[in-house]
Length: 272
Image (cartoon, rainbow, N blue to C red; front, side):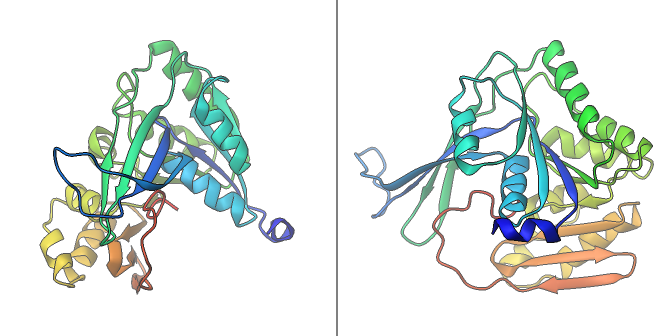
C-alpha cells in the first residue's frame, strides 16, 4: 500500500544488466511434443532479477531505483510503466530479450531463455557510470541476474569494490561467469549478502547438495552456505525451492519453511 512508504526509508538501488520481457503461459494439458499445443492464461511482465527485486520493494513501500539498459521504444519500457517501477534507463540501441515460461498442469515450469543482445564498450561504460552516480547515499546496491554478451565477467566485482568505497553495502544474486568472478574475488571483494538459489549455491561452494534437497535434507545446503561465510561473505541467503530458504552468517544459521502454494508463475519467485 502507498501509505506504507513513510515507514520504509531505505533506498535500494538495483542493477539488472540483462533485463527481459517475460511471457508466462499455462498449459492446460500435458505437453504434446511435435504437435499443436493450445496455451491459456498468457501474461507479460517486466523482469530480470533486479527488476523483480525493485518491483517487490516498490510494492512494499520501500524506496528503490532500478538501473537497466533500456531504450525508450522498447516494449519493456511500457511494462515497467504499468507496474510503476521507479527506474533509470540507459539507452543501448537494442531491445531487451524476451523469455517464455510455460506452467504445466502439475505446477512444473519450463523456461525458454534468450541470451540477450551484446553490449558495446560504450554501453558498458554508460551503464557503469549510471550505477555509480546513483549509489552514493543509497542504503544498498543489489547486483542481479546474468550478464549479456559483451559485459565484463568481473563487472559485479568492480561495482562491489566501488560501492564499498562510498560505504554502501552490496547484495549479489547472479550465476554463470559473473558468479565465478565473484567467487574468485573472495575474500577481498566479498559482497555483504550473497543470495543464490540451490543450483548457484552448489556451483559457488563446489559442494553437492541438489540430490539431498530433493530428498528433503537441507543439511548440505547449510554446510555449503557456511563454507562461503568462512570464505569471507558475511551473509548467505539461499532459496531452496519448495523447501524454503536458509540464512547463514557468522552468528548462526536459520531455516524458513515455505508455505505450499499453487504455482501460477515462477517469475521473480526467488529473486524477490
